[in-house]
Image 1: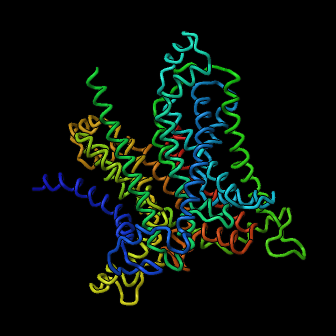
Image 2: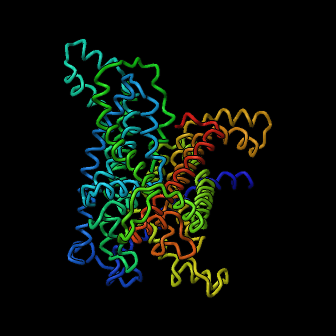
Image 3: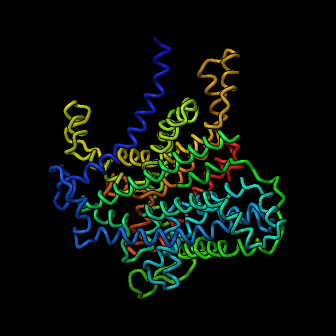
Length: 268
Length: 305
C-alpha cells in the first residue's frame, strides 16, 4: 500500500502543478466568450461575438495596440537576430581580444532587472532630448533581445562540424558561398528558434516598454492602462488567438522534430 | 525570461575547436557590441549620472541639472526603506515557493518521464505554455479569481477559513502568490535541463549502499542538480525583485504591498522625480549584483556565468 502511494504521488502532484499553471490561461480563454459589456469581470453568458468583431470595440484601440506590438516585435526580432547571430558566430569561431569582457557585456542585460533597463534607457533618451515613440520602443526591445539570440545561436554554432565548411573551402567555394550554402542553412534552426524567442520576449514585454513608449500603446501596455477600468473581452480574444497559434507552432515543431529523429534512427 | 540562456549554459564547451584570428571577427562583433554599448551600457551611465542630479533652481517640475548630490541616495533609502526590504523579502519568498513547487515537477518530467518521450515533451509544452499568453492577462485572471465576490473567496469565507471582512487581493499573500505563479516556468526549465541529464545509476548506487531515499535525495540528487537550482533561483529572484506588475494596485497588490519597481515607476513616469527613480534603480541593481555574485561563488557554479 505504502509503495503504490509513493509511486502515484509524484505523477499526481505533477499533473496538479501543470493544472495550476493552466488556470489563468483557461480563465482568459473562457472569458473571451463572455457576453460582457465594458469590463469583462462577471459572467453574462456565452457568445462568439467578441471573436467575430474583435476590432469593433473602442474604435479598434485593442487592434491598434495589437498591430503596434506585432510591428515592433517583427522589427526588433530582425535586427536583434542579425546582430546576435553575428556575435554568436564570432564567439565560437574566432579568437579576439576582450573575450571575457564581451561575455560579461552579453550576460549583464539578462541579469539586470527590467525596471533598471527601462529607466536607464529612458534617462538616456531624456538627457539627449529624444522623443519617445515607436522607434525608442524598437531600440529598447532590440537591446534586450540580442543577448538571448547570442546564447540560443551559440549552442547551434558550437554543435556545427567545422569540417563541413572546410570541405566547402577545399572545393573552391568563396567565403560568401561557404556561408550562404553551408553555414547559414545549418544554423537556420538555431536562428529561427532565436527569432521566435526574440519575438515572444518583445511581444510580451511591458516593463521596459512602459518607460520608453511615450504615447504609443502596445498590447501589454493597453492591458495595463485598461486594468483599472476593466479590460474588454476583445483583449482576451487576441491573447487566446496568439496562445493557440503559438501552441500549434510549438507542437508542430516538436512532432516534426520527433519524426525527423525517428527517420535518422532508421537510417543508422 | 533568461531560461534559454541558462538551459544552454551547460552545453558542451567548444574549446576543442581551433579558433582563428581574423579581421572577420571584428566585422561580426562590432555592430552588436556597439549596439549594446550605446543602448545598454551608456544608459546605465546616464542612470548613474541622473541619480546625482539636483533640481534646477526656479525650474519646472521634472527639470534637473547634473551635480553630485549624493543626498539623493540617503533620501530614497530613508523614504523607501520599507519598499526596499519588501522587494527583496517578497522576491526571496517567491523564489523559495517556486523552487519547492517546481522541483518535484521538474524531477518527474526530467527523470521519471524519461521512459515516455511523448509525455515528456507534452509536459514541457505545458510548462512553457504560460509564456504564450500575456503576462498581464494571466495576473489579472488571478486577481478576478481572488476578488471578494469570487467563488474561491466566497467558499473560503463560508468555510470560515477566511474572516468575513478579509480580502485576498491587495495583501502580501496575493503578491507573493502572483510572483510565485509567474516565475514557476523560469524555475522549472533550468531544473529540468539539469535533472534530465542526471545519471540515475548514482541514485541506485546510493540505494545499494543502504542510504534512505531521503539521504539519496539530499546527498546525491540535490548536489547533482545544483546548476539548475542556481540558474532557476536567479531567474526567479532577479526579475521578481524588480517586478511591479504583481504588486501594482490594479493587479494583485495594495497600498501596503508596493515594491521598489512601483516606486521607480511612479517617480519616473508620474512624479517626474528622475533622480530618485535613478538612485533607487542603482540601489536595486547593486544589491542584486552583490547577492548574485556571492550566491554563485558560494554554490560553486561560477561556470554558469
